[in-house]
Length: 213
Image 1 (cartoon, rainbow, N blue to C red):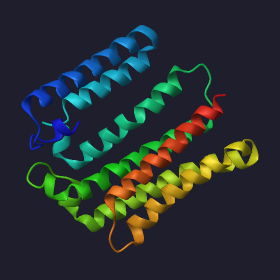
Image 2 (cartoon, one colour; image 1 turned 180 degrees about the vertical axis):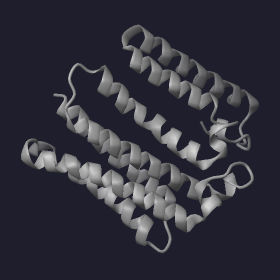
Image 3 (cartoon, rainbow, N blue to C red; image 1 turned 120 degrees about the horizontal axis):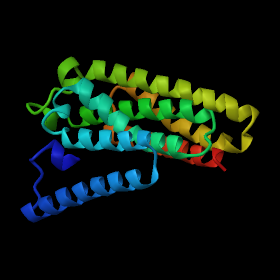
């Protein structure tokens, strides 16, 4: 993905060719596997992912609404594939999927703040278009929406699935740190906030897996 994002990475031409071919092979294998084992909706999701990756550098990444929304959606599709390919899914997964999406949407904005100088002149990201302050507020708001959906899972866990409480609280902790950092800190550590989102989403994936047992 980063090779598609910019041509400025200083790696050898051989490494560039190998990485592009590995990525292409992985996408084709994913499509073949989905066609062989999953239903039509999962095939459409996988085809959508391929189209987004192929069109990322020259089209999608140029303007922040398409870039942020579509990449957050692509990052959420593994959860969607698991949801729709399973024989039974806990009702909490729908709200959890929304929490994952808004968390990744937040992460996309944070990464744009982190890559502010790299993106300048190449694409119109949210912090370049509206300023870092506006980007932080929108990212913090998106994280609050994620926390709202997470609170619904917490309410369900408190009543029915108490054994998941620790995982939910860990996720709330990481997402809460991101929200507070974006909205109230004088300066943000974009790399750390991005890591917290990944850790929180990992906690959600564990929760989804345990709910399926």
